[in-house]
Amino acid sequence: MRLTKFTDLALRSVMRLAVSEEGDDPLTTREVAESMSVPYTHAAKAITRLQHLGVVEARRGRGGGLALTGLGRRASVGWLVRELEGESEVVACEDDPPCPLRAACRLRRALRDAQEAFYAALDPLTVTDLVASPTGPVLVGLADRPSGRTA
Image 1 (cartoon, one colour):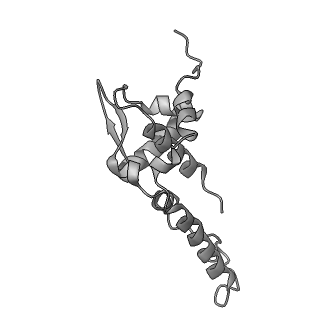
Image 2 (cartoon, rainbow, N blue to C red; image 1 turned 90 degrees about the horizontal axis):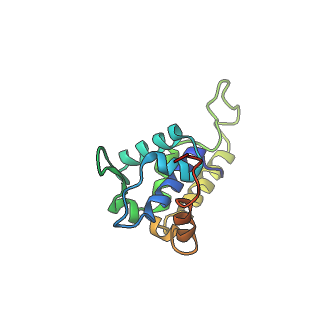
Image 3 (cartoon, rainbow, N blue to C red; image 1 turned 180 degrees about the horizontal axis):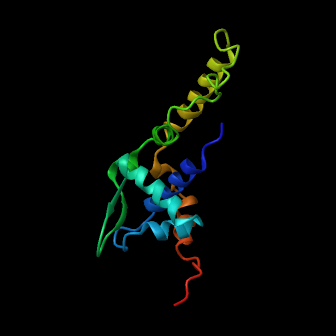
């Protein structure tokens, strides 16, 4: 199974936010995008979706920024991936023209079971688990990379 780039970016963004220090200035969407080396517009879409899921809180204005919510820290990675990926089928049996085997196909069910097994393997993991060492220090180090901005 392969995750969409959108889901990958959303997961990496959550992980980056999870290692932000309590006393530090909150990260902005632009800073998250730069640390992940992705376009701002892509990061903004992922952050917006994460807000709708209640995983990220965004505050505007002075002192604003992004923060992971309590749900975001303890959320099951399996749940998060299911929400980000949506209810898509592994194979498209109902395309135009529809697959002639769709009425008696065992492959579709087997692939659906395999997809659920993939998600189930992620269910025990939380976002906090994902950022445990050695990952956390690497994520923190991403903020120290030069962004290409001039002073």
